[in-house]
Image (cartoon, rainbow, N blue to C red; front, side, top):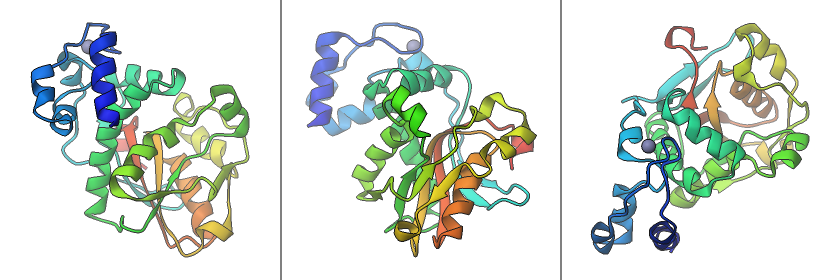
Length: 243
Ligand SMILES: [Zn+2]
């Protein structure tokens, strides 16, 4: 139903590529072959030219292992540069739901990769939480928006009660590597009542040094979680500096 709605709103409103502003053409003949197939073939917010600049990585798995922090496996397929930067901006600051839907396809591919290595069935998706002040200012958590289509497609539960951000931290990718670790120390608080005995997959938009995800994982494991791994839409870490 959502696909149907998107197709008609797309045709009527004439959507533009969120990166280069070119008018997107709708393939209505393709749509008649079935809404599901149409969605597979068509992006509603990104033109072909910008799509092919995304540089998808064949393997998305990365090990994050920072000294004195909890190690975890993170799946992330897109490097944070080029058209993706603009797409993420629309996701984060414009609450553009069509962008979220297009980007969630890549997050879904990352989850598929993660499922080859760790238990995904019966796990709980936990979006990395925002501090309440930022939540009030922005009005939504982009990590939660990205997690919703995954939960729906794979019939996995999302639970935002497991983890709270108790410290308002600076944006990670603007900090130096050493500062990122101290920035997130003590920033999260887990609720033992909900995370005890659970397998957890964290969801976030961007992986930088991995310090945020490691801080979340450490807090969840200290409160009884059995395993914690993560999927992110993009990564901004240099390949030789991972961890
Ligand atoms: Zn474009």
